[in-house]
Image 1 (cartoon, rainbow, N blue to C red):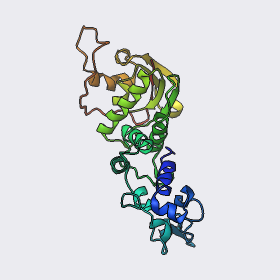
Image 2: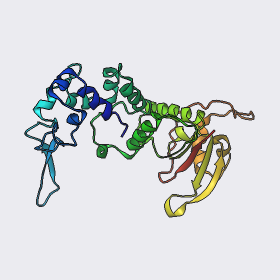
Image 3: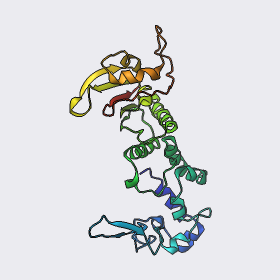
Image 4: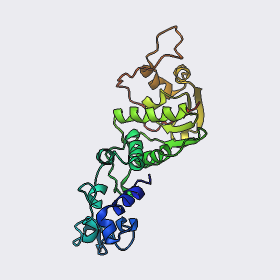
Length: 271
């Protein structure tokens, strides 16, 4: 989805061995005949149908899960064949393709959104909802920015470590600073507290919600007694009493308070 596979295939097709054999970029795709393993049709696995149980997938006996035929795997770039490259994580591939701007630039965007652990050949169906959103965000980051784009994200922090969340926020604020608008539906207080504008929906979740309980800056939300979000957001802002704090950078503090599981807050980051 990020467009990395195309320049990788072109790179392999440009090697001396590939040119000698007359291999084109399509030879290094597991979606078309020619270079892929026909026994598994490039999937690397074989489906075993069960009568009373869910189907089972086992590694292909012919390619041993490598998805390509023997002739294709004989072509290497910097000592690695196409399967070994697709089995790399984005972080490892960024080092491997450091001298290829058309590839490294897109890999850098994956790193920027905290997806360094994702493998280049990983199936999209194995990604979580949050990961899939960040892959799409990485694709947008690799495009030429217009400064007039509206991004809508639904809980992009799902499954992220605290450090990765901070990295994602850096990317989102960078997009905001370039003139774009970002709307986020999110529970995570670390995201909410850095927003320019918060819309708190409630008073409960599901059929018991849907009303705007409070809206404004995070500093405004914590003053609204009817806002559940404000109640749990207040300890994180660490605001001094009786002083203006609009320009004060929020400090992150740990809190043992448990937030309602069904509550959501709409977060808008705009310029």
